Amino acid sequence: MSLTRIAANIQAMNSLQSLKKVNSKMNLHQTRLSTGRKINSAADDPAGFALARGLESRRRGLDVALQNVSNAKNILNVAEGGYQAQMDILQTVKEKATQAADYSLSSAQRSAIDDQVTALLNEIDDIEDETTFNDNNLIDGSYSGSFQTGESSSDQISVSLASSNSGSMGASGTDVSSVDLTTAGGASAAIDTVSSAIDSLSGAIQDIGEYTVRLNSKETSLSTASTNTEAVRSSVEDADFAKEQMEVMKLQIQQQTALSSFSQANTSPQSVLSLFG
Image (tube, rainbow, N blue to C red; front, side):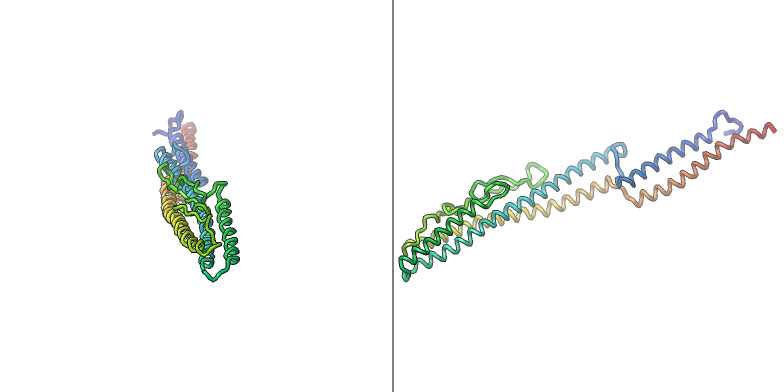
């Protein structure tokens, strides 16, 4: 390349082109540093962008499913609390039935015990009415459905909670509403009836325990899957700040040398003036 041909300053053009390339690369790395992302548009890495969006979608679905599991556990805790309160009452009713079955008591005493038991059975029904979640009654036998526990439509846990009132306790539907403790014979029969109701209600509480165990397992699995999915997305899309800063420092030096080279290339043609001295 001859310096005596000045109609086209090829050296300056090459230097300018190099400077533009350096500036473009620096802009890319500075954008990554400012956003924290290696991929800021589909043009940066089309395949990586698509993969990152798919991973983000899955992670967000997993996070919502994790919240669903937490809500489901809360619902079951409320239902179990209602069952447990009724269980405490049934245990008391059995104690009263055992007491009334003793022949040493008078009719008036048995009548008083029967009145107390009637009040306790009414409280069982009140607990059933008051055990609700989002206006849905949980233990009247109507609560049956599926909790969404994953990002796929098939990731569900079906739940059905047994009815629990004095006329139908637990899965077997034992009726304790008509127990009569005014006689020793009636109180003796009530012992077996209440015992059956306790067993039936225990089965309903056991079902809740089994549902909760499954939900705990789902919670652990979802939490792990969400974390791992986010880790993969981060490795694809997020910027490595140390690497990006290192690249910026290197480009800053290249920018300075390219600018210096461009300046020198622009002054070189002036040497032609010496031919006219």
